[in-house]
Image (tube, rainbow, N blue to C red; front, side, top):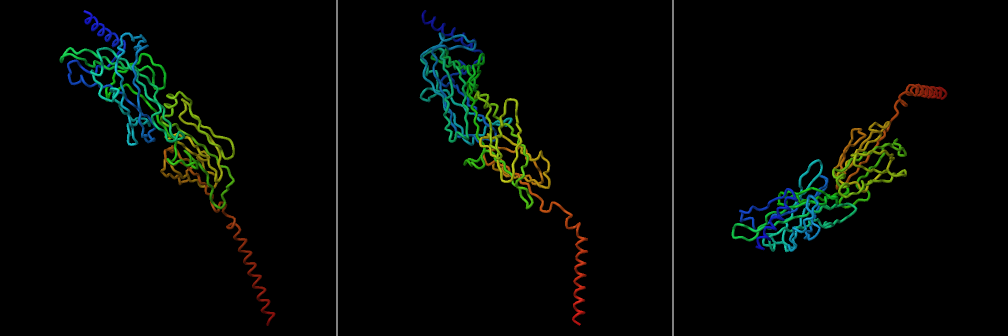
Length: 415
């Protein structure tokens, strides 16, 4: 009699909890003997970065711990009394990416995805025999922060997911195949999102490999520039050169520089809960030039001046930022011919047809710079010699005539 009441209580608790959780996934059917020995719970890692960033060689780890108190369902109801407290310790496979992990790209954002299986504490396959008896077992799943070893914090940044999930594993008695236990379902409920914000009434319908919504999103970014850090170039360097024997190397030339956001910047700020970074340079003539985006601004333009051999350098622009550099509002400067040459992510470019603007150039992982050369014409003013030619001819004739007169006079005197 007592046994019947116990079984009935477990079934009632399972039904109650399932209704509270909402949509769940039934991992195994009761009449499927093959599935009875293998639980297919898994977590998903989504590593997000700008499409121009190389995927890092990184391993991510997770923590799964038993919950024995203050466990609530999607409605906020405390369901601790319905749980079994003697469940086994569990583990989750680490997830590793390499530089060859390309993932998928959409709207300039690259996402690399991997999965880790939920297992026994020793790494073995999680099956119904891992549990002591029928019941509902609750676990909290989180990501372990700081598992990617950043070589240079001045050039790389990894924002880890702060998400938390409550996972319910329901173990039931088998009615067929000689009795025993079966894993009836694995259900998950997200309680805190990637940015650390509490979530209400959000349910995860699947924990199965290849279809797991028990997901954690990390965002990876890099500062532009060469792998071997070049302090002279920085992330982006802009310089001025004046050539030609009549070129004025003391003249200040007017420039405008527009920066365009990298694809993941808004996402990084939102998930980290921080503010938009300020990208700052010191101007050669004094003062600073600060660029700071916000949620409504995709690009920012500032003006400045440079003369011969002067340069400005950004040290911290993220890979994926693009820039448009223009001299004199794109108009010709007097008798100067303008040429813009440089590198974008290590690839040379050249605007040699008198163009005063280079647009949408990428700040990549390799060298990024632009040099604006103004070449002054050697003979800018014409007509000086040509206009005086008749007078010079007359003077020449007069001189020649006077010379001839002296010659003839001297010859006559000698005779």
